Length: 138
Image (tube, rainbow, N blue to C red):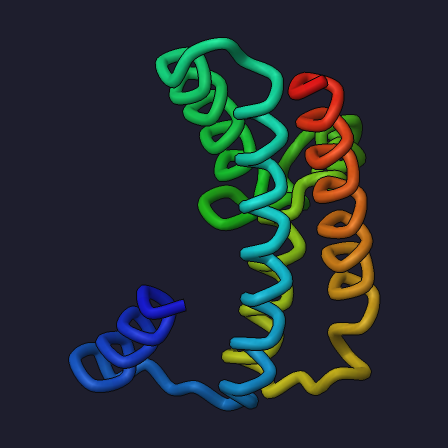
């Protein structure tokens, strides 16, 4: 959250990037996205044996998520089957929401669908991660 605040501050003060929407709304969405990221990290750590394995798996997951998020390459330019796969990518939904809030001034109603997907993903991943950890600890 501190990095998000710092990035927004630098973007505004140094680069003069206009921010149209609600910053508190963005931080609320970022908190849910952070829960998804923590859940994925817990899930990975519960499934692997060593820290090195966790680092390799996480590196692979993060790269795939970033490449398929629409951050660097527009999702519309991807193959149709890849566009369908990106729907399970939490980074895609966070990028979509961030752009909508910061560039278009979107409110809660406009971001409801991607936000609910992100929220559902957070609940699902955290439940699966905790259950995986319990099985491993037993």
